[in-house]
Figure (tube, rainbow, N blue to C red):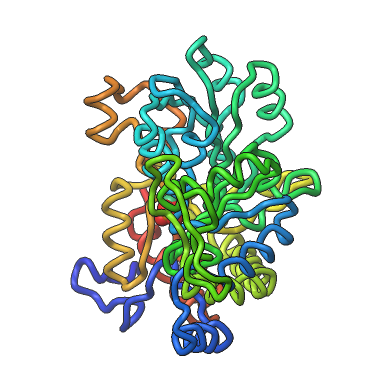
Length: 398
Ligand SMILES: *Cc1c(COP(=O)(O)O)cnc(C)c1O
């Protein structure tokens, strides 16, 4: 009594395509964006500052500096902390390419350390094995929103005098021992890309306790100009500005901040919705040939950014890509988080990485499949996802 799959000509579970990682916009930010446009102050200005203040309060750091992406923030982190070109920076291969690309943009060498399969996070033991005299920094990623082992990682960074950068792209709401993970790194970087828990369409933020880093990130992120250069156009009168470094163009705009201010206020209610969907999924998939996300570690809070299934390939007749194609054809959008970075052509060819180098990251890479987890999903959408996943996995079950 197997249902005919859409990929084989059967009727799809849904008529219209369910977008993966759908953003959740409401009237509040739509009105704010319109007001900002009508005010004619659309570039960097008071709304960016308001968003920064609210964000630093939410995370619990002294400083928050808004940028145009997380990628920009990762790049600037290495620039302002004076990590010299040629230095080695340890990171996880189980991440989005931006994490490692930023290391290369700063002239440094990305060195991968394998993960723990359960948490999909970088393994502190593997980090320690990769430390050399050239290692200057570690960039960790709180994968899917699950916190890394901060006690061990902070200890390691202290012991070897390494800069700790947190790629918190998935982890706005993530907590470890009662504190947001965005307080643990020397510099922590967030993404407000369309699919993230908070979106400004494109955007990013760094948080830090260091006034030196916060100031430098403002300067280097705006052409290397000596003052808060947006004052140039304010009603405070004209001020000269001076170039003190050939900086970058990484600032946020007031239009983006208009989204952010209201998205931030709704973080917790949207989290609750994702939490309900999460529990529902975990129950629904318990008899299918998949590994559902590990339960939450005591004393932590998972940001519930991605719901990742690991396919039990030994119990299936096809590979992940076939399963993915079949579920997509049922009109359910999916994501892959991630193809391990060391398997991408650039990283293979440039650093000589090969399959077999990071077995745990490869294990996840071959089996991973992310299903929709937006607070925007209706109950009927959630049912459709469950129905499509169940239909396809039942069909291909060995
Ligand atoms: C999305 C993402 C980024 C990049 O964020 P942008 O804001 O698009 O630059 C970096 N790291 C991880 C882990 C991500 O998921």
